[in-house]
Length: 116
Length: 110
Image (cartoon, rainbow over all chains, first blue to last red; front, side, top):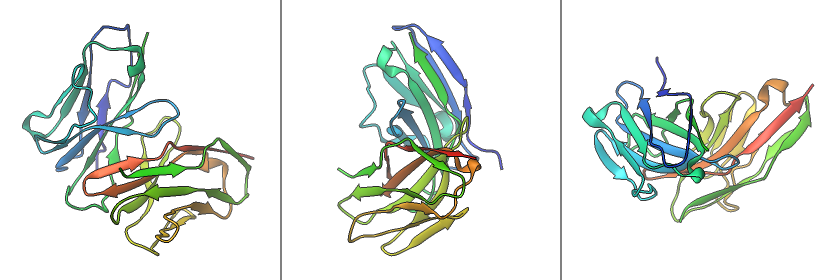
């Protein structure tokens, strides 16, 4: 089966510019997650969708970050304007059944963002 | 809130050495516990999991036992290979919330 697809693979921008990342989860997976992984740290949840609704966005810096999942399938994460501290790998993950707490997440390869 | 603490790296071992990566957790309820692995240039993938106390997860020669009394989920492998070089993440999941440790980089030298 096809995995979680993310693009672009790498992005370099200057501070105050805007950037967008795209994710296509595994077909049929109801839940989609965006994580931020800063170098040397574990992934930190930014936002979680169930179908096209937001389940948890408590750690999303809403003054500059936004995300949407139209039609409950693919998703975009946007940063506007970017700051130096946004340099990180942005990971998208999906899972089939949001009610199954022992279910694993499937991760994409991530987008590595460098803000100069 | 819930959290995971794992031993700091990097860890460098020779091939066929014994591996232990410590992981402890803090949680109010009864989370499921996971080890994820990230090979160079790839996304995170599940290595093993355990869903209740005393469960042992195992995969590819790796093992970890869910110890409720010590709130631990240490990862072990009896004989590591060069191909095991990767970053290992301990994680817990409760309800819909998945929390990760900071990761431990393992390098295995021939």
